[in-house]
Image 1: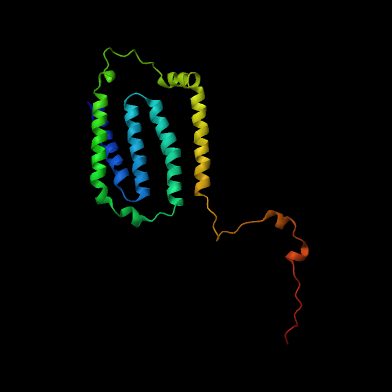
Image 2: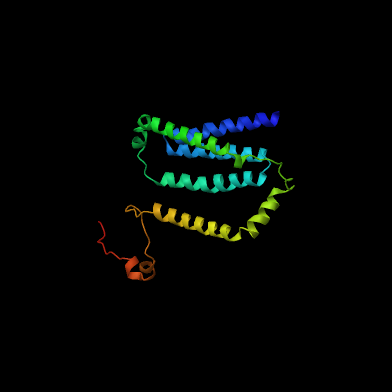
Length: 194
């Protein structure tokens, strides 16, 4: 009973924070709502007995991806006035799309292919070990390809957000090395005051 109550509590927080992601007008607040959604879904994974997925969700998405999102949002020069325009105008379209997606999900999940006719086999005692064996044996190449794609995405994000600014001071190392004593020191002869 207590576990079910906690499940409904985290599910409610997850739904509210997910709605906040798409309705909050400030992009930083939307990213913070997404972090709360990740934490709530991680708690649901932990309640379901998938502790590895719950911990990985917090470490990878909250610890790395969302920090990168926040850096990109803060690096971009966003005009918040443009984001506030037209919310009410596009609300019926958004609600219609949400209704259609929900209806499709209900129809797909009620198909006979998703119904379990016989009970599942007993789960292993340590699902982290079972997941590791499958991930590093059967799916080793897709795992490595995904790592390379993520590395390329990080490099692309850095290149896209890096812009040349005129107000920054840059060093020219070759000029600094070739400097002589006469370039740094200048003797000025002045007449003494009386």
